[in-house]
Image 1 (tube, rainbow, N blue to C red):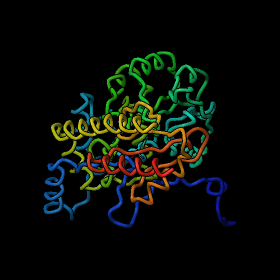
Image 2: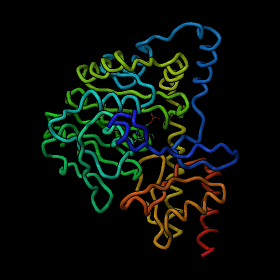
Image 3: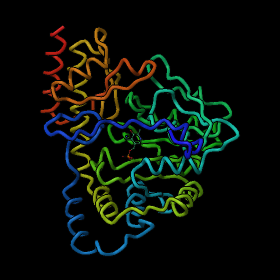
Image 4: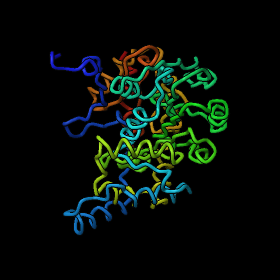
Length: 354
Ligand code: PMP
């Protein structure tokens, strides 16, 4: 704490990211990275970029990437915003699109960055409890609000809302912006992007960190009506103008264009998730049905923090969160089949130990 700090900085509670270990050989199932590498076409594009054009500044508008995303989803490039990770798209959406007369609404169990953005930008918010089954009930959000933000599938629960439910909500909530954070949508959900043509207040945000396996490249994007996208562009092009670099643009374009690699790897992750869910249930865990590349599980006889600690002693990282209800669970990212077998064996040993 310093007397030179502003009120905003004093009140900020920093986000605690998942551990990025410095020691080798840990099985890392704590930050929902993709266990498989990106498309070989990405590596090829990066090599070409390095050889030919690294001395030149990147395109500040990342037009190639906007065009690739627009082509993928059948929208106009002026409906696409390109960002340094979906975190940046979220940050600009929080800052630029939420009204201040009424509170922003989001679930009480969701991506823990949302309250951080509210703190940064002085946004008033209210959290809405999940149902007993850890689902979002959008009926609870039908009241005056300065915006609604939710992740679908939700994190860290992995629970998915069908598109029909989201559309029914959009029909009734027409005056504030609805942000759907689809970081994990490719692992079994149906994207809300087609709805942006009908609902000018809908902003869909996606990332290339998960299903496209490019967490290290930091690329995300938003799709919405031209008026919403223009708001994000205005923020990015004013004080916070960090263009995407040449590698990010070239790699992301290549990743968007390799449908085969994308389909193969995400189907493998989905299969492994289902196998892990069955294995955990066999050990007595309650596992929430997940549409993401992680599962959220609790064991009736174990304190989740202790369990995560025991796994860490065996070289396996999973995520445990503090907070009401959520602290009973561990979140396990889906790894390779081999990592998943090692995780299962470690859990069997730990549970027997008791
Ligand atoms: N939204 C959700 C729900 C997430 O879990 C994450 C990843 N931690 C992000 C957004 C941000 O992803 P990125 O900045 O890597 O695109």
